[in-house]
Each structure stands twice: as structure tokens, then as C-alpha cells.
Length: 204
Image (cartoon, rainbow, N blue to C red):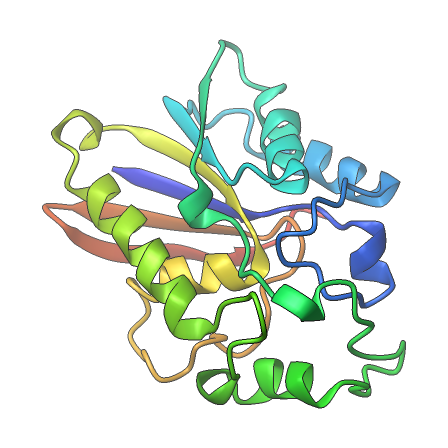
């Protein structure tokens, strides 16, 4: 099984540094262009299936990548790989253009994620780890998918949570940083054992 785990293209809220968890924000123009470039770079990868977060920015990124495929690829939505829910923090401007934090809770999210407190009506890191692990275990043990090549379109925090099942250092949640928009991580799974083949590759 080979998995291509992709973060969605850039949105206007990404540019404005707004907290964008389950807020359903569409791709910006440059996000569309980057998704198209990613699809061009991956056009020779023959995907058997695509699983995407139901949020429009991830779904559209997947569709733009799949447009370059020679045949039609089935797309399934799965809410377990949608972005972390920030609850009352959704829409908050978390930093300025100099990348100085403006919100103490979001500063903790990015710098000390294990101690990020669950916002009202939202989730914490353990919540997203739990639901993405449920998705991961079901996926890698599905007998029908063992020889398939699968595109997974998700989000920054959700991608890191999903790949937490692969990384060698489980204490470093962010794996050094938030995955860039349209970055691609390639994972090979054999008999339930996962190996990271490509790490945060961006086709810009």
C-alpha cells in the first residue's frame, strides 16, 4: 500500500493567519495554482482511490490533483481526517506577518501542542490523534487496499496527527514545523508496518 498524504492548498485565511479549523474556507487563487502544479507532478502516479476531508479546501485540492490522472478515481470523504476543531478560536488572527503570535492559546498550539487546552466547543491534540488513529488503523488493515495507491487530502494539524503513526519521534508532534500547503508525504505500508518515503515535498 502506498499513501500520498497531501495538505490542502493555501486559502485567504492562511494568508491572513486566521485560525481555520473546521471553518469551511475555499482555496485562494494561488492555492488552486499550487494544487494544479501538484497534480501535474503526480500525474504519473496511478491512484486507485482518494480519501479526503469533507472540508472544501481539502476536497478541491484532491479534485485538482486528480484532474491530471488518466482515468477516473473514486473519491471518499472521511470526517476523521478533517482539521482540528478550534471551537471559539475559529477565525481568530493568531499571528502577524512577522510571525509574532497575537493569541496566547494559539502560541501554545504551535509551540507546546501537548499542553494546548481544548477550546470551548473544540478539540485538543489528543482528540485529533485519537480520531486520525482510528482512520489509520482501519485503512492499513483493510484487506481490499493492501496493494492500492491512495491519495489522502487533509490539513496541517490533521496530517501531522495522521503521520504520528509513522514518525520515529512521537514526542515531536509538529515534526519540526507545520506542513506547508500542498506538501506531499509518501508512506509505504507493508503488513501493517509503515515507512516514510517522501517528507513534506512541495512541487512549487
